[in-house]
Image 1 (tube, rainbow, N blue to C red):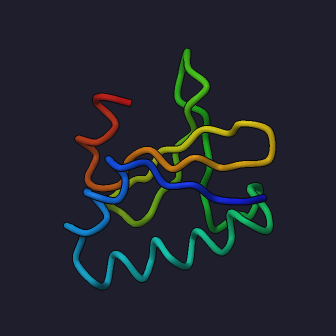
Image 2 (image 1 turned 120 degrees about the horizontal axis):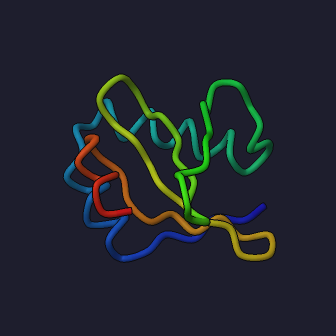
Length: 84
C-alpha cells in the first residue's frame, strides 16, 4: 500500500515532539506492509470509514483508505478524535 498525507496531517505532525514523530514514522512503515500488524492497534471509528491507530498512550493517528492508498488525516492527542 501507498501512503498519502493531508495538509492537516502534516501541520499536526510538525507540531509533535520528535520522539512521537519517530513513533509515527515506525507505525507508517508497519502500515505500508500490513494494516493488521498487532503493533498498530488498528480499529475502525464507529459509524465512519475512518480508522484509528494508537501511536502511544496519549496520541492517535486517523486515516482512511481509497483503493490501495492510505490517506493520513490527523495525528496527535485524543482531542484529534473528537473531529474525525
